Image 1 (tube, helix red, strand yellow):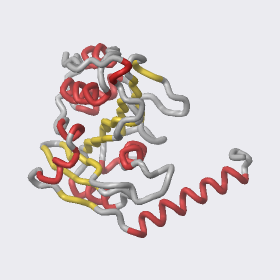
Image 2: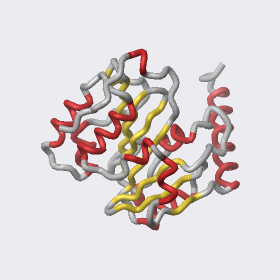
Image 3: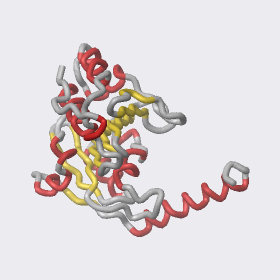
Image 4: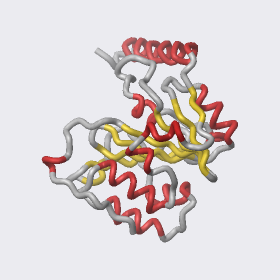
Length: 220
């Protein structure tokens, strides 16, 4: 098993850390490129073997609460033709994994891990299990037990935990979590800037959703 090699005490874990993220997509490159073209955050796409890595290449083009580019990427659906996909994110001091697998029709499955607390069960999120993660990664079935042991560690930094999970699953591009800008110099990389119309459609959809929830009495 690949264990986190950088334990941290509660005092060394920052209360607010920089969001980072890597999404690995297994779909055809043309389908992944089409998905990236509809993003509201700029993306680097890095081809590597059976996967295409997507990392944030700049600030989100939409306003709060959708101004954190890594969080927007983590929550964004991946269509079947561009997937399956696995996401690895550091968000608000936590390690977050997302699973976009065939058969999931209501968005991704989530794994949320926090230093000193371990695995969390945030309300409202569909959880992903270790067997599903191993299957989507294409790893051997016995890796499941290694992954379970790893996720029960509690004394590590989120970034180290994510890199250890990637190593355990045998997945590429772990170094981009620590240095996202390095994606820009990798062979075959392409950069995709948000189109103004996509940003407009996103903002309109958010406004319509808020308006509907208010009409239904969900928001005060």
